[in-house]
Amino acid sequence: MSGHNRSEMRLGFDHALQMVEQNRLTLRVPQESMSVENRRGMHYHYRPEVFLQLHGSTDFTFPREKFRLGEGEMCVIPAGVAHGEVVHPGAIHPFRNLVAGFYNNTLSLHFAHETRPGKPDIEVIEFFDAPNLDTFLTLANSISQTHGSQGPARDTVIKGLLLSLLGMFRNIVETGSGQLNSDIGKVFQAKCLVREQFANPELSVHHLADLLGCSADYLSHLFNTETKERLTHYIQRIRIEGAILALETSNLTISEIAYASGFADPAYFARVFKQHKGTSPQEYRNQSEAHWTQKEDQPKTVYFDRVDFTHGVPIKK
Image (cartoon, rainbow, N blue to C red; front, side):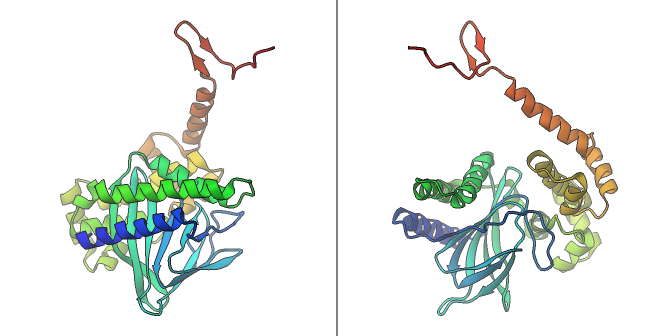
């Protein structure tokens, strides 16, 4: 991503922050009750997506609703919500939006443009190291949940959450960097494609090579030479990272997680998962649940000479 691209990102977030401050930013959030549905012409992610419409418009379609995101508006799509996109140029400028995605300890920001009529695709993308990714996710998820609520302070809460999230985006563009960005050429592009398409069961070294205009043997050799990791292993690792997130944060069955992670066979998914984590998917989920249960059993208050497991008792007058 060039210096000009980064400058454009900064201006985009600055403008959105100004709109929020002035209570003029239109926020769109789909109110879908179901998640992780496989719908023809749609896709979903394990984590939320954030869209800022810079120019033109985007027609979003969901399983039970649709809306148009206009210029200067913002959309947060909750994790697991299937959606399709058809884009349109503006009266003066061609279609363009700024999209944030979330991965394991990594944040991606990319500009999308219209590659063929109605079809958006990535123009330039950058990945940022984000050890505080949980904060980004908490803010994005809270915006989605609060948007659908009817509390008396709803608008004030949303405004505060938007200022925090957009401000963090603005900061990471200004100061952030990422290990992924040190990769060059086809290795960088391959990593981008794997992280964007890991749920696609057709994703393979040959598929990536076709997209990148080279042979599978050349891409495999180049990837291994530059990263010291086989490309097939990298694809599996990213898929397993996505599956781990689903095991820890959703009630999906093991088979549903397998299919949503790009595995056509749940049994094969279980074998690959055990190779990577040393345990089966179900055992991993059980261990994760036990870990959180153990945390709940920890003392609520720790004094210098004792611990207290209660939540506190009101003082009797």
